[in-house]
Amino acid sequence: MSEETTPILSADVELFEQGLLLLRVVYEEPTVDDVEALNLAVNRPAPASLSNLEREHRKRVWWTAFCVDRAISTELGLRPAYIGVGEGLGYPDSSSLTAEEKEEFYDAELLTAQIKLCEVKCDVVDTVSQLKSKDIAGPYEILGQCLQ
Image (cartoon, rainbow, N blue to C red; front, side, top):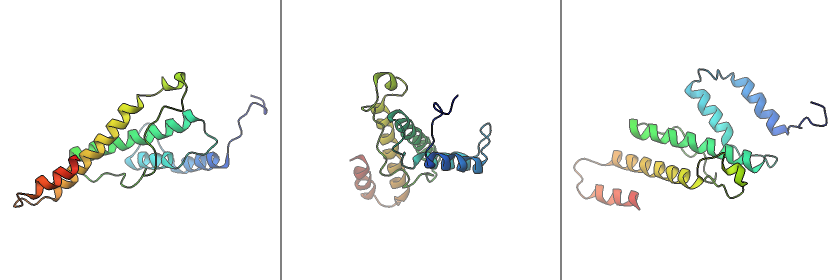
């Protein structure tokens, strides 16, 4: 590859690569901390130099990790790892992709529906865990809020 065809990396990408080297992630046997660190790194705003395809890929990696986290935490009754992280990040959106690029991804509308369902399930579990056993009217009022 000649110097003319070698892509010039932005300072952000170089910094990201240096951070990954410091993490020393063993990809064959990652720990939970490794996965969290990588997901948090992918969640930071994508630099303007990235293509629409790369931006959408980052977004979907984040939302997939979010859904896995929410699904596991609600099933096991644990607190989700990603609370308040990812706010401001848009839902998956294929509108800026070419037809060929769209084929690379799962349907954006279905993934968005899964994300929202994960959020609702987590809200219901949080709400139910706060209910008192002697309160008869409270559960209906609180669960009604979740369903809305």
